Length: 633
Image 1 (cartoon, rainbow, N blue to C red):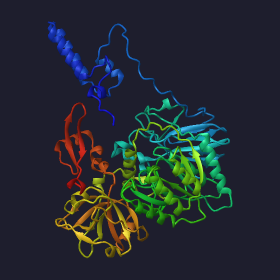
Image 2 (image 1 turned 60 degrees about the horizontal axis):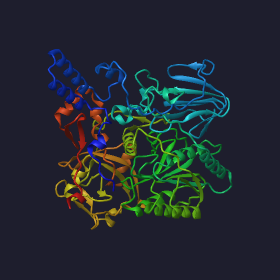
Image 3 (image 1 turned 90 degrees about the horizontal axis):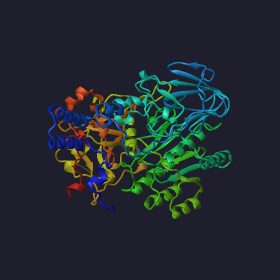
Image 4 (image 1 turned 135 degrees about the vertical axis):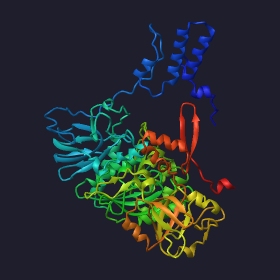
């Protein structure tokens, strides 16, 4: 175990550099040790106050105005070297190369092997020639494709494979088609697109990474030769007369599985004669087409040209149709690997034999994770596996014996402005804020706060109850605290065949009369059989009306799908979902500074509590964690 560091070692300033408080203290000491004039004393105090009041994020030019500079040069510590600028485009921007240009639309004339990189959101259409982007080959028959080139991931370039003419069109913000509209309710969506104070266009052309007006660490999407060779071999498999391949990418966390799978999907989808594939998403921690905590089967008929939160699957989607989904109510299957495997098996049974399949696995490739992955191979009929980076020798031998194994050396990870937890929160937030798609099937998002959305009123008691019971996956809370745990939490909406009561005992809490399924002696519950159930989506319990015995449930499910629930048995499943802290603070982020300060002063908000000002950080809201069974033992 690493030894603890002293506070000065962990947070102290380098030699010769003082904090604002230390600078102010030294100024007072100098004033006490000498007898300066009143004017001189006032000058020292003003200078110390100016240093202490200077915010940490003040620009350099403002700092130089507040702090007087010495008249003579003094030796300073070497500053960290800035990262060299990376070339993003070799496209020569001139009148002949851009024959048409307006505020919303550019027409580019690209010569063979020229490439150009845009950051932001835009539609791309090829009117002549062939271009590639994110592994997808686009031509004049490809139609309009929506691209989300956001700084949360590596930015793909548009590469001309032959002389081509491409039209790039900005998104119209009036139709809520921009995912950046969610910036209003969450800072996680800030500064990831192209919009800034100097431009309102939804995309920006970048020649160098240093050209970024927001000065972010822009990283281009680069595909190494080894990955290209593996993709080429898999492409050849599609030309063979054998049955359609089923391809599984494995690797540790941050090994590049999501990027490889998108390249693979885009290659298959844009091949002549291949207009669809099935995507078996069995990574509950970083899924590709839905909120975390689920395993899903999705029919894909369009390229994946953006982060996961920009192409969420749904039952009525034309391009990413949700075939079936099961919940494990957690970002890992460690609590119940048997239920996880059964869910994957049920999804695999519903895949046609003549359609290519891409499987997105989790990053657990050792111990129990490797053992479960090998079990899944036998049930899903995987023909090819791709190992990204090194895996355990035993796991590698198992892959070789059951599949055709392809290997790709793991590349060094890139610095990201968003952590995996941030990306999960962004994906869940985008899921709850999605609206009905446009007439052309384009996704849309609502920037209305969760607290302002009209919830569904669901009864949980009586003859017309909307739900049958509440089931806890993983460690179940004490029944007396079930209402407190449910209030403000995420739940999976699971429809099942009407035989649950025969297999599980349903009891009710003493105070709220909530129906719940009794857990086993060890505190864990029996999961619902995936062959007799399916997850329809997620919901947020915004409140519990104990007097009328009803839930206030917020869910993005359309009315038509909610109406179908009236004819089926429904169970709300809670478990180890990430806490939806983003939902609790949306209205604070959406409010202006005046209203935000008023809300802070009132100090009366559900699910969060106010933390007193600490140092220079100021006051913040912190999540209140409700009690669980484990904490009450």
